[in-house]
Image (tube, rainbow, N blue to C red; front, side):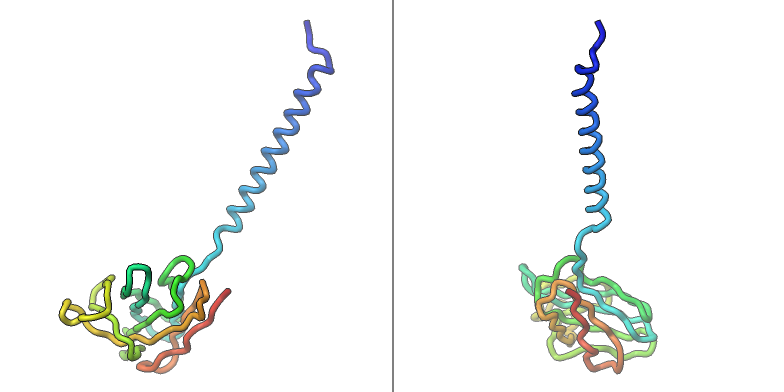
Length: 164
């Protein structure tokens, strides 16, 4: 016995519905992948003609931390922290490797000459670290922020631009 046209109709209809659902699912998935996650980072742009070394200080849920070194070529940018920013204030110390000099300020955190992550900002010398003056960057509670290094060393550069 063969199927009548009436008995095949629901099967074709289901196949058509399934193909539309599959196409919609693929379209939505590709759309989400293309959009990607919203970027929110702390970046530093070196607008000088020299390579600079950068150290970062911040306070998170575990307390104070300082990290370094990011080597940033002339007229280039690097991400220092990935993801939405959790603090309003961040602290930067930078060294001009080519011409000498540095960007710093009064707030002190611990650093060392080699790559580091240091917890705490007190008793630096007693713990075998260098006490270094950083300049403060007020992000205004932005979740994405870019700091620009330019101009004369030993004075804080322009704080940067928030990108919301």
